[in-house]
Length: 100
Image (cartoon, rainbow, N blue to C red; front, side):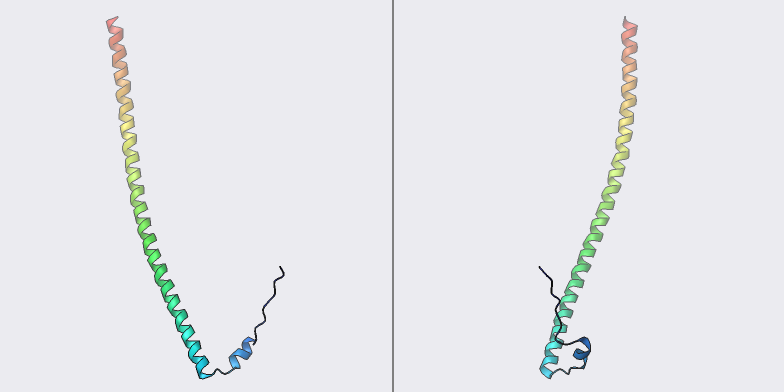
């Protein structure tokens, strides 16, 4: 499909110099007011999302710290289990060799 460029009815310079009727001015400023209200609504929504994202970041940091703590605890328990298994295995071999 060929794209057609839309030509404005008036150029920017002509629009600036074209006087508006009072009704057009009223509608123009109402439109601006509606747009400002939409912008304010968007700003509020974005700030609310930012607050939620900050809360999620805080929770993720806490979860990461908790995971690191458990990871360290798991390493300690695994090491103690390996040492206890090694000692128990050697003691059982020693007893079985002594009994023979």
